[in-house]
Picture 1 (cartoon, rainbow, N blue to C red):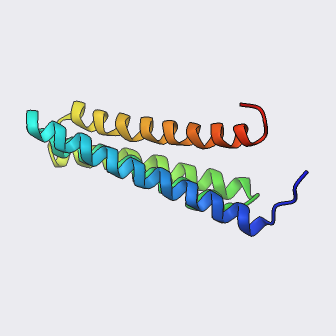
Picture 2 (cartoon, helix red, strand yellow; picture 1 turned 90 degrees about the vertical axis):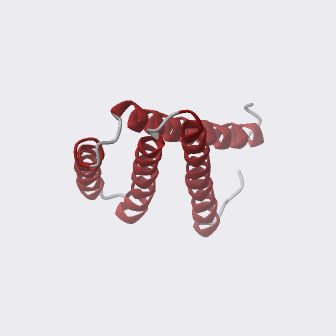
Length: 131
């Protein structure tokens, strides 16, 4: 079994998270531009996608900061949930964004995160001789 220093593991994890965030941004922007070509609610797609990107970033930061402190992670998750609901309320009711467009943006960002994450997991499994 190969011993990996903690610094290398954290830098690889940071690279993976940055890759997920960048991929989310790129895909959300592409979908927003495509929707812009066909329909007016492109701003809702962008808003929903960027809300999920911010949520993904906050998950990474809060888990990294909390370490093993489960109470701090739960507090951060509660804050993130409240912020997410508030952002959706602002987007849909105050900014009058189309709800379906906001959901499409969120769906695209989440799907991108899962696909990129699964690619990283598969790459790591392949290195272990499992894939």
